[in-house]
Image (tube, rainbow, N blue to C red; front, side):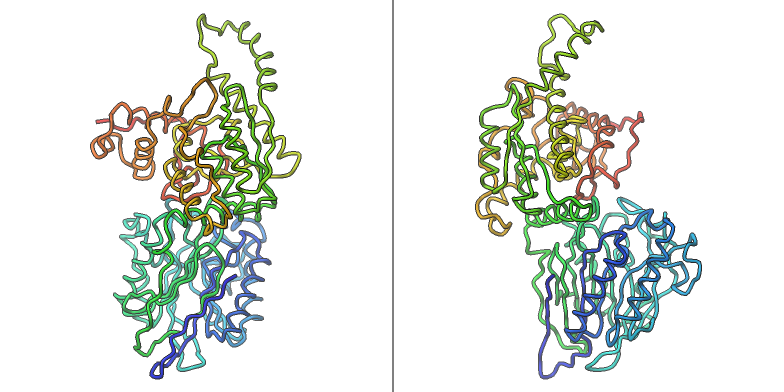
Length: 598
C-alpha cells in the first residue's frame, strides 16, 4: 500500500479540510476481509490527521457483486458489517464507503427484500450522518445494475467537521452519477434523467465526492479526467474521485484517485493499479494549489496495459486460490508475452513453461522457448506431442476408413490432424494442471479469438485468457515496450527474444505454415475487428471508411460471426478495451442476420 501526502503550505492559506482518498482492492463477497481492509485504511487516514476518508463504490462487498446480491444472507452480512464499521472505527473522522443497502436506507428491516440500492454510508464518531443511493444505474456493456438496484431520488450533502476551520459541505455521488455514460458513448441513455450534480450544488456542496468502481479501458482515463474537470469548472467546486483498484474476474480497476479544483486543474492524483491512500489538504479559502502531474496522462498506454494485465493475472490467481501457473511455450510472440506477464504477476518460481514440439515444429520454436525461459528465470520442460498424436491417428484412421470419409487425393495434414496436434497439447497442459494444482494460462490474442483461429479443447484450454482482449498488433507493441522499458516493468534483462518478435507468426501445424496463409495481414485484420466489434460499424461502412478490399472485409466479418460458439466456450479473458469478447458483448450463437455489405 502507498500513502501519498500532498499539502499546500502558505502563510495566507487556511487549510480547513484534510481529505483522504483510499483506492482499495476488495475481493467480491469477502465481507469480513473487505471490512478489515476498510478499517485499516480508516486508521491510517486518522493517523495522517485526515478529517474525512472516502472509499470506493460498494467497497464493502466488492464490485461487481452480481447475483450474490440475491443470495440468502448476503445483504444481512453487508448491513451488519457496515454498522460495525461505522460504529467502531470512525472516532474523530468522517468515513464514507460503499455498501449495498435495502432501498430506503439502512434502517429498513427487510434486508432480504427485492429492492436494493447501491449506496454510500457516511459515519462519524460512531454515528450515521446520512446515506446516499446511486441515482444513475448503468445497464450497458459489462454493467447490469438495473437487474439488481433501485435508483435513488434525492440529493445528499453532509457537513464534514474539520480540525482547522468550519465544517465543509460535501455532496455525495457514485460513479455514473458524474459520468452519465459519456465516458463509454452511452450518454443518450440518460436523456430523460435529471443530472444529479446540480442538486448537490443547490444544496450548498463545496466539494463533490465521487466513489466509483469504473473498469479500466485503454484511453478511458483521460476522458474521465475531462468529465471531472467539466463538473468542477461548471459548478465552481472541488471534485474528488476515488476508484476501486484490482481485478475481479474479467474486469480490471485502475485506481487513479483524483482531486480537481474549481478551475478544473488536477491538484492531487493517486497512482494506478495498486492500493494507495492519497491525503490532500484542500485550500478552500480561494488560494490556488499547485497542479499535480497526472499518471493517467504521463504513463505510456503500453505500460498501463502491462500493469493492468499483470494486476489482472495476480488478482485472478490470488482471489481464486491459485499460486502457480502453467503456460505452453511455442517460441511465438503470444506465449512469450503471456509468460512475461505471468512472471511479473506471480514470480518466476511460480510459472512453468512447457515446450511441446511436434512433427512440424521448427528448431527456432524450441530454442526461442528456452531462451525466453532463461531470460525470465522460469523453469521450462519439454514434452513431445508426436506419440499421443500418432496414437490418436492409429485409432481414428480406421474409423475414418469405415465411415468412407477419406477422399482420394486428400492433402495431409488436413484440419483434423492440425486440431489433433493442438488438442494433444491442450490435454498435456491440463494433465499437468491436474497434477500440480497450477492454473493454465491460455495464450491466444483477440485477433485469433475474433476469427476463430484457435482450437476448441486445444490451445483454448485453460482457466484465464490473458491476451484475449489484446489484438496481435498490440501484443507486438507490448512486447517491444517490455524490452525497451524492461527495468520499469521489473525485468533484469529484456524478457522477449528478438526472434519471437521478428519472425512471421505461425501455428506450425503443417509444413511451412504461416498465419497469413489463412488470415489477412494483421494490420488489416485488427482494423476490421476494431471497427466491427468495438465500433459497431457495418461491413459497408468499414469498406468505405477504411478503403479495404470488400472480399477481405466480408470474409473477416463472416468469421467473426461464425466463431461466436468458440468464444462462448473460451476461458475468462481480461478486459482492456471498450468491447471485449465476454460479458459486455452478448451475441447469439444460432442466428442468421447478415450485416449489409453495401
